[in-house]
Image 1: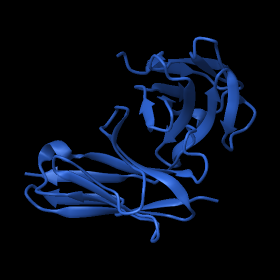
Image 2 (image 1 turned 90 degrees about the vertical axis):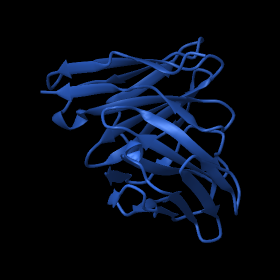
Image 3 (image 1 turned 180 degrees about the vertical axis):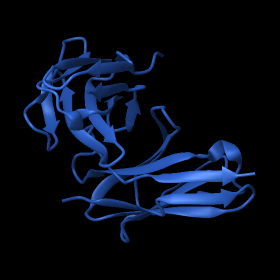
Length: 111
Length: 114
């Protein structure tokens, strides 16, 4: 079974731009969650989608948004990028509470 | 607010030695997870602990859960260099164990020296 796939692997953007990250979950997994990982704040939950609906949301500003498609693939968008948005963004899929399976992440650098 | 604290945050140990990483959490939780992360890599699931007194072992790693004390431990037996990585514990809020929202500890960076 293929794992969680995230694209792109690396991104470099400048302040004020927007960015879209993509995540394909493990086949059969309907829940997709997004996390931000930084050296200072650690791993922080952004949001979770289940069956195309946002089921949970973390404490991030509205510049961070996401969506999920009917095939369970998910995208995350960050608008008006700030330097502090530089981070590793991890996507994870899950199935019936059996824990999260993480993708390789997208390393975003904002210059 | 659910908080998860790990200690120590950094651990340098000799090969062949034993050590324990502790994970405390502040409110009731249904499940506790342990993950491993190698530098520049993603998180790999190690253990899922579902109930009080649960113990799971894989190779040189053993995890246990005491829900009454809100404490989980990750015990390393006879450490080898390959175990060098950062280890995270994570919990979900009681009643939300089927969702993808986990609260992570700060991580414990383990360095095993030959």
